[in-house]
Image (cartoon, rainbow, N blue to C red):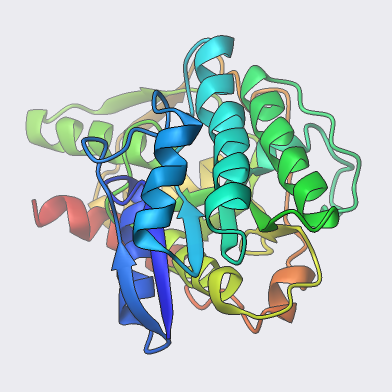
Length: 297
């Protein structure tokens, strides 16, 4: 039976991961300290090591990170947190499996229509991608050196119930809901022509469980995607159909800085399959559940 320490349970991915781990019969306990107990961003490695000694986990999962902010804020959340976790785990819980969430933004532009593997060159084109690539590389180096049993999951575009407006479909759902309430016949979003790999957050949570509990991992970096690419326009169109909105969806401005230079990306999920995992929810199901979750609030 496994004792898991999970950071970030109040977030979109972390909440689903906490639920999935708690439901697994191989897990004896999931401990999810809030920021009052330990703040990964501002806390010291010494304080983190003290918490690890107190909890004595068999695995540590980090779902804390930042999507937006200045370069300094992104590096703090996505790189320095990784470094602190590695140092504290090596000192206080060297037997523990250490799992972090990285990002497909680490790859940057990739060849069109070719699923990207973990061996592809990583050339991020945003501060966000750079900050995550640095965290992933630190995990690789520590794992290869045998200092910590560490793995980084490169998360593509997570969607599903509970997603926030920081993400495209969460933002689109909020604008569709407002338009329907006001009787508006037009909403505006950024450009929607890019192809993205949307993975359901509940499938992602299942992969986090697999990465946490599978013994003898062969790889230190694993793609976390659906293995399918569709345009953002198609995904938003599906959401509009589920919502019953037949007005205009206007595209204007630029996309998020973290991804606007990437026109096409799709995960090769072969390594994830080696963990006994495969996505079970299609895009249509995820989108229906996004809308239903908002209606239930």
